[in-house]
Structures are given as C-alpha cells and as structure tokens.
Image (cartoon, rainbow, N blue to C red; front, side, top):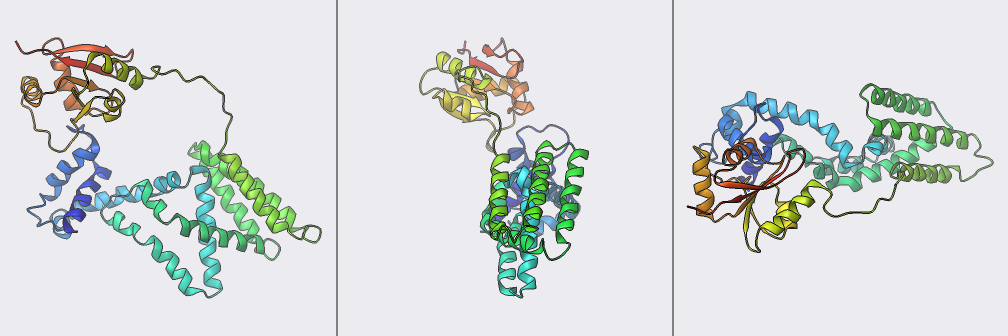
Length: 342
C-alpha cells in the first residue's frame, strides 16, 4: 500500500511541471521531476510525509495547481453544458436534506465524496475520479430539483436561481465558453417555463412532472447537434496514413520505436515505447542508434506526442543511420527505417 501511494505521489507531480521541455512526455517526466524536488523513494523510505517535509514549498505549489484544475475536471466529467446546473441542484439537495433534519443521509452523501480528498492530497486527480460518486450527485440533484419546484410558488427562491444562472451566463461570455453559454441559456428558458407552469397549477395539476419532462428534453437537446453525414475514408487522417505506410514498409513481428502506440497497433506491428520509465539517457545520437540496434528495433514512428529528446535524437540521424519513408505535409509525423549496419 505504501509503495502504491508513493508512486501516485510521484505521478501527481505532473500537475506542476517546469516550463522548459522535458526529455519525455509529462506522465513519465513527472517521476524524474518529483525525485529532483523530493528525493527518491529510497531516501524517503517510501513515505509521502517524509518526502513533503523535504520540500514543503514545492508541495504547496502542487496543491495550488491541482486546486485550479478541479473546476475544469468537474465540468469535463459531467458535461460542460450540464455540470454547473447539476452542481447547483446537488447543493440544493443537501440543503433540503438538512432542513428536513435528515442528518444521517446528509453526512453519508458528503462521506461518499471524501475519498476525492486523497487524490487532492497526492495532487493526482483525473476526470474519472469525479465519476466515482456520480450516483450521489444525481440523487442529490433530484432531491434539489424537487425542492426547487416546490419553492417556486411559495417564496423568492426562483429569483435567486435566475440570478445565479444569469451570473454564470455573464461569466461564460466574459471567458468565452460556448458550451456554458448554450447550457445556461437553455436552462434559464426552462426555469421561466417551470415558473409559468407553477402559476397555472390549478389548471395543470401535474405541472411539476411537466417541468421535469421539460428539463429532460432540454438536457437531451443540449447533447445533440446538427450532424452532416460525410463518408468515412480510411487513410485521410495523418495517423491512419502513417499506419498504412508503416504496414507496407515493415514486416509482421517488427518492433517499432514510438511514443504513440495506437498508430503502431493499427499497423499490426510490435510497440517499443520510448516514453517508458526504463529508457536510458544517451550522450549522442550515435549512442541512440547503437542502442536501437542492440534492442532489435526496425523502425521509428514520430509525431507530436514524442518528447523533444526523442525527436532530436531521431532527426540528427536522418540520412545517416535512418531513412525517412513518410512525412505528412505539415511535418507533424514521420516514419524512419533503421539502415542495415555496414
């Protein structure tokens, strides 16, 4: 358990990486940066607390960075157009439970969310972490929705909701967030319709059910769009073109060095991952080529996912030990074959 926690702690450095380009992609480079800042796991006896004590300032920088990322992660997890209203309704649901003195259910709902704090403490939070308790969020949102509809005829809560949604809408224009603009516009219109239905409750006895169906329709509307059918042509995209060429110029069973395994998998060739944590450091591009020969690699696929060190080592050997057989128009992707040793 301690070893796993310490590994997650090192991975969490990804949230606060140096400005200069690293040797590897951020998920791999984070291990090396963490060890520079906090020492190795052996030096810290695999204790996260001991590592933090070595450099508390660096850890506070990580906490600040992860705190800034949390709203964006939540918006992504629960769909940007819906997430803010969903969060508001969930909070309203908690308030409703508290007012009804259902303290046990309120506390249990909060407890379900608390495991997220472990990820925050390690500064390793992914979008999927917010979805671990999605059922709690939606249950609270349903309770909050019922409480909102009950209050439309009784007090001024509807105006508070209009103010909140309008404020978010104004903020979305300031920050130019099209998804939230559309979501808040649709949900403000729904709130207006729900209010009008509440004022005609004598005529429409099931007006709350009608309002809920309108909300469901609004949410479904936000998840659709105008779809123009275009025939799918394999090989038009850069990675697909590269995979087709890679399949032509290599043989089944060949090992291809890359940081984009999906392209090599698509070509049905063996992946040699340069972005792994076990790649040695090279003093020169000649050492890199010697290492490739020793490992038995036949080709290289290079694109934007490749770290700068991989790109530099490869391009230095172009027209020397490597033969370029593919490059797209923008120079974003390359395929090189390793020349036979003289």
